[in-house]
Image (cartoon, rainbow, N blue to C red; front, side, top):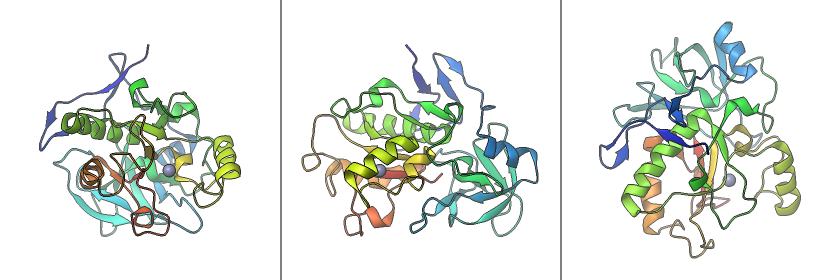
Length: 266
Ligand SMILES: [Zn+2]
């Protein structure tokens, strides 16, 4: 059985020390297998675009002073989803160092970048670009009982967040939906409709950077993660440290309230 863990001990206010090293079955993973879109940016002019996720809704991504999700890295600003950046990737391929402008020398996660010449990748990520999450992360009360996947950078953040959640509440921070293929998004769009399911090709789930959380065997109303409950309050407060954020329009008073939906923004 494949297991996926994170290096680093719990520390600093109960949050796990984030690291860019993913370990599967005890073996640290290389990050050479990045999507073709990112390889273009790494090899070429190093001009990249913060990902436009949908035509009508966008989110802002974090700029950090160090290429890590650890608490020692400060969030020094945010960028809109259409910002063009010049710079270069670090050796892990998980972070991009900005070389020009107001955020010169700062870092953004590679998970939200595409080369300016890249084709659309939403829902069509190569399996080499996503990381299979451990089996304990899948909410057993939700179908289908298939492995869940995230981009490598988002997987690092999720595992840190889940470790801190387990330390705080003693239960796993499980997932109902993570990366979605285009065909799965089309199925959900047909059955749920907009806005509960985004137009195929525009969902954040199609980029491998989004999680729908769900604690096992509880429905939406009973969930301890429901708006305002203790687990939700904790998750809202601590998710940013590990690179996740629930967009404003999905907050309790937003236009499309979804307490379970978090984007990886670095
Ligand atoms: Zn969602």
